[in-house]
Length: 431
View 1 (cartoon, rainbow, N blue to C red):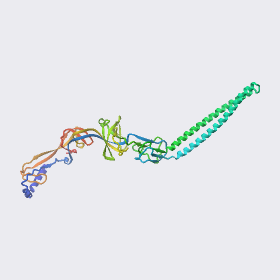
View 2: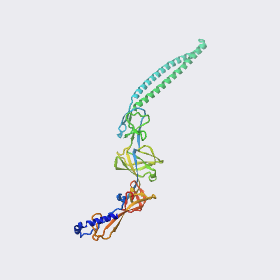
View 3: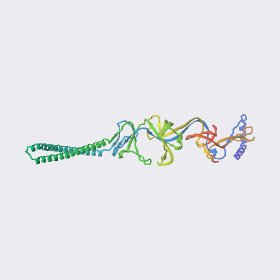
View 4: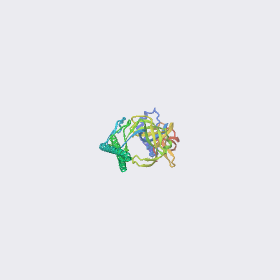
């Protein structure tokens, strides 16, 4: 730097003769302009910022997803193929058609069930008729048997004939019981056929799903994170599979995750600011409604596999109802930890750790000095007053230990070590 300084002075002497006329016109003016020289090294190219004093809000920022607090689930009750679905995202009212399923096989099976019922009824009618005929025979045999003992006393019939009549009656009575069992079996078959027909008719009617309540149509998702796909036309679901959801968007939640190191700073009822990627300029207010008791492995959004990081599930209740709040939208949640009305703060990128892992910043200081009187005039990086003195400024970078307070994702509070207005480097000098 010193060598460069003298080079400028010599160049000023060379130009002195050419400058006499210009200086003569400025004799009534006194000039005191300082020249700035930065310290050698890469620190001269590192951006600067100033230490600021003002309000600071400490937040934990995480990404989550909107969902409805309450919703109706539409599940498959049979294995019919889907041939029509209400468009996803459409608002439906109670009774609106949601899903239409293929029903050809249930039309056939319903017809078969009706035929089976008719056959069972016919069989029941036949057994009942046979039973009535059998009962008539039994009653005739009973009357015949009951009349013979009196006649036997008078000598009109023999005792053997009475016994024969009794045995005939007992045989017919036994047959009547058998016929009654056939009627009972036929009646059971009719009942079974009626239930089968009712079931097939129910399945036929279930070919059309209607909305049990008003809501926003959201298709169900199948598979894991890597192979997830939504329900679509042409699929044949299995019984009990979720097909569609009707969320109540008047009460929305955000499912988010917080790192285990932030758990102690989060509590139920804490204020939350919510921003949607789809509407980045709008802030929705919310509050934490639930914090999971158990930690779990964070799932990578890229690979869909568990990572080594531990997280806790957090539920955030949105405190307003808005048509823009739709399930599945990505939301950024800022959990407000503390608010400082006035604090000294610096950007996070201006703080570094020394060899002892203590926080430090790099502060730029300026020092001024005057040289001995000289008779040269320069017109480059310095100006000489008429007394011949040169006022110069030289900057230097000092390592300044600091005591830090809370931080958010942008700034950190400084408790000790800096003053408002101090100039600090936004990078670490290498020389």
